[in-house]
Amino acid sequence: MSKFLISVGHTASGNVGCGATGYLNESNCTREIAPLVVAKLKALGYEAVKLQIDNADQYDYVKRAQQANSIGGDMFVEIHLNAGCGSGCEVFTTNGSKAYDSAVRVSEALSERLGIPNRGYKTTRGLYVLNNTTMSAMLIEACFVDNEADYKAYNAETIANAIVEGLTGQVSENNTGWHEDSKGWWYVYANNSYPKSTWFKVGKDWYYADEAGYCYQNMWLKDKDKWYYFKDNCKMACGETLTYSFNSNGEWI
Image 1 (cartoon, rainbow, N blue to C red):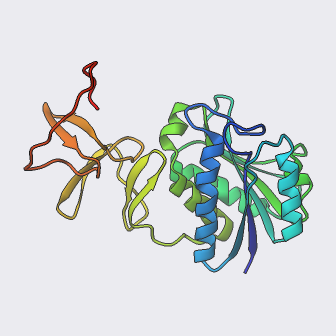
Image 2: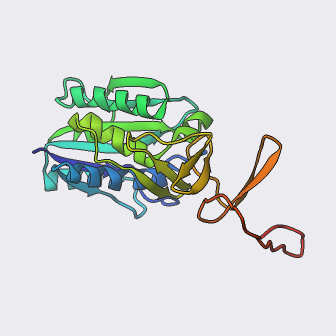
Image 3: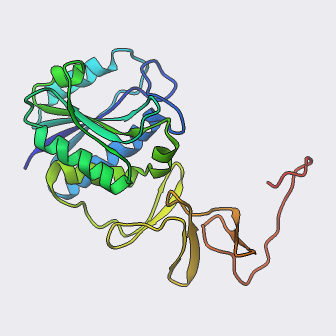
């Protein structure tokens, strides 16, 4: 089985060398996605190692390439988010790279799963980590941090599944059930899809998912001239009395 080195793009947020920011924070997002990719590859039987540099370092990309060469593997995969007000995903390799087929599949899977444009597979001679790693290598730009549609489509679990599918040709393990990231909770069906902009029921409880798939939590929804409230556990309040607190400015707390 192949050995994958999954590299977290950029240093931690707020440090020298950190990623782009907009609707999304690139450094935070890559740190959500990469561990999921590693876990999913391992679940399929592959060897996978996460490479990550958090401290401030304007040459963090040099050190990640050095880490990769020191550890060794069959394929180096670095995860980024894009910036510049475009939209969609794209994957880079050097010209003639053995990672070509996988890079094409990753870009296609990201586009299909996120519902964003496929900017496609591209070659470049200008990316240090691609030129200075001793194994096949690709750099993934999963979506744009400064595009609202990409922001709404962003889901770390979905991106990780797409990357793993592109790298291995295998669909990751069934993720049916509840999942949480820094933005909230979402529910995954048995076919790996998830509800968006709709009511859905799990067991005896009702929930509502917004247009990005995240469930309403501690908030009201007006639907067909009727109001509904979703509690901290995202369940719709039903058959109960709730108490609200307000601060001295009249703000709901």
